[in-house]
Length: 207
Image 1 (cartoon, one colour):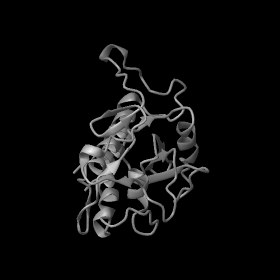
Image 2 (image 1 turned 30 degrees about the horizontal axis):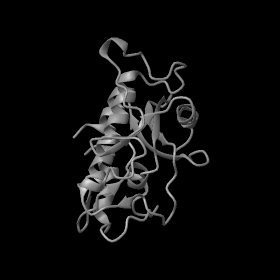
Image 3 (image 1 turned 120 degrees about the vertical axis):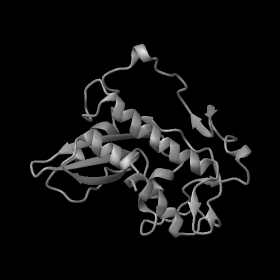
Image 4 (image 1 turned 45 degrees about the vertical axis):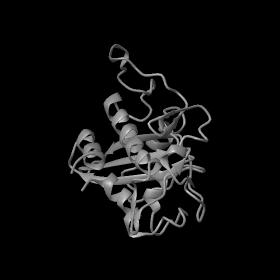
């Protein structure tokens, strides 16, 4: 089972139908992924001299301990009711512009601040949005069935200028745990002797 799915499945061990409060002991990583206030992520990759590889993803919001991860609604028809701009496939979207195939850059980050290429950045962003869409539509499983649908769940964009720099600064091979900068949150995983493409695929899409 891939790591992102494992983090997501933390919700299956708790009951969320009566409340969706953030508990760092039981749904730490799930909470970061499902926090409706988060609007951007950035990931980075570090290759260490001992052969291990570290992949970190930083989110631009930190869940409040004991606070609601999102506002619940009774039906998915209400999920877009509080979106400030557009809503696309049950996620609030601020920037609807798409990138054409002829315009695909080598990286979303012009400075290469996170050392990820466009393919890996897009994979990380899109898979996070896939799981957030499950929350928005009421298909995120908990230990009683499913967590309630979410109102105004934000679609994530990829942020190079702020959390991209922050994510790269955390990829220290001498550390075994990581602390996010103030107001940010961070998920990470360590793999041995694989490329950054393989590491991200293991975390996001492998079964």
